[in-house]
Amino acid sequence: AVRIMTGSMAPSSGRGALDGLDGLGNLDGITGTGADGQDDDFLPTFVDLTPFEVDHFVQGLQEMELSDVGSPKWLTQHEHLEKLNWTAHTQAKEGHDEFVIDQFNTSEKVPILILDLILIEVWK
Image 1 (cartoon, rainbow, N blue to C red):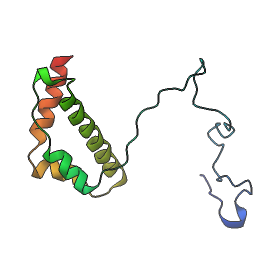
Image 2 (cartoon, one colour):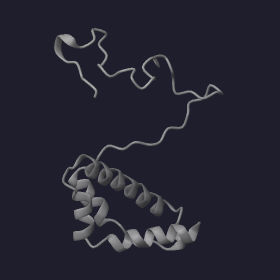
Image 3 (cartoon, rainbow, N blue to C red):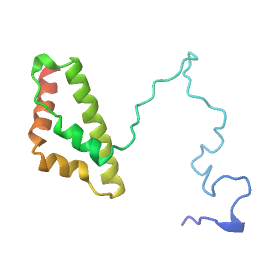
Image 4 (cartoon, rainbow, N blue to C red):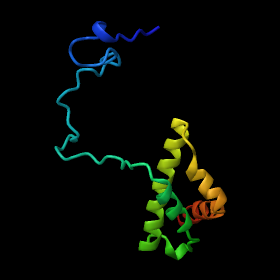
């Protein structure tokens, strides 16, 4: 069992009681540079979308053709889908109201998602 210390029992170093238990507690000074001294590429992170943004992005989804893959129109829609996915994942993980899923269902845009998945598989 793990006991979390609080109040006057907490370590005075300013760090949490569980810091260092994973063996990585002393990693101060490590930077995000690779062996060649260049910055590593990090995965993009997004801020959760507002309900207004979700509504706007979902309503703007369009069926694309194979010839559209890679075009500015397709890239914009793909970015919107990535942001919607990020927000939906966060909502599900944290147990919040899943308004992204609700918006896809009420707007009847799920078939466009399925078509987009098939389109990318065919393009590959």
